Figure 1 (tube, rainbow, N blue to C red):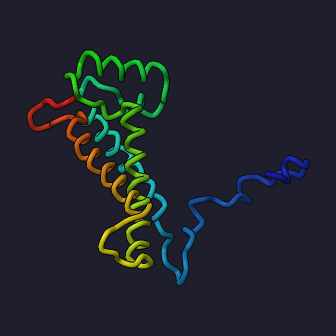
Figure 2: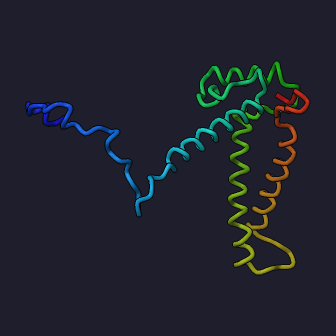
Figure 3: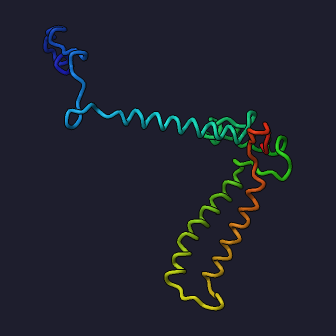
Length: 168
């Protein structure tokens, strides 16, 4: 193609190799090329579809669509507020409420700190009959976060396929 652009004469279709005439590329030791990229793409698409279906199950048939969840717009936030006020019973937490999402990140942070703190305490701190110190206070704070999360989880809405209803 570069030769044609420079003004070199084109010799015709006889000199152009046909794609059908060329053998397929071979991998190491003469094996056929791997189809892993296509399979990985299909698996990725299936996972994305499964996640969208799971979100639709959580939200219900009249809730937000997965497309709405990916775009954080004012309309989506207003729709969540409308669902919280009109559709959901009092005391139920919408799973996509911004305050509940912030709480979720607090719990994740507490889990990370616990994952670091417990091995540190076992390895480096000597056992005492009466636990005193900042590590003990931090452990009680983390315990309170996990207890509050267990109670909060009981009030988060979900969609129940078995009974055809649910919290959202």
